[in-house]
Length: 149
Image (cartoon, rainbow, N blue to C red; front, side):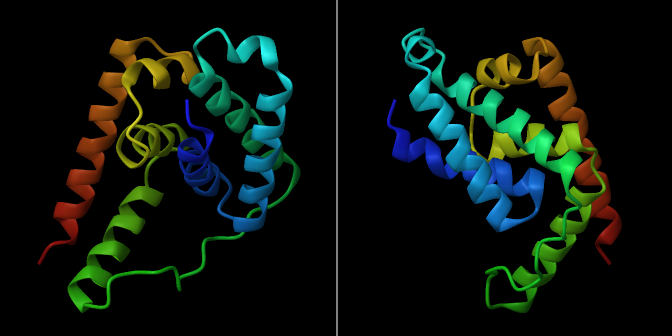
């Protein structure tokens, strides 16, 4: 497993959960520090699940300890108006999802993780991951279709 490739995925995951860049960076650094210190676990072939599990726990701990600030509205977006409006509609629709639904969408479609990894991290069965991910996508579809003129 190439750690550099996984760093961006874990960062996006933490940023989505914490909604604060500095806190996400800290969580990712701590995740990889713990990963590198756990030599025995890395050799079991489930390194990616280990990274997500550590990141998930760190994010949960940080969320309980400190209030979060919303992501700034000046995040990079396409220059065209249609792209900006689509991005805003998607951001609003995503915000309406539960934390678990957001987590599933980010892991599956943003980070493109296999269902087996998501199941291992969340403790859900593969079937439950499929079912809940599809339900979250359907919520997104409905929310986005309501926004269309």
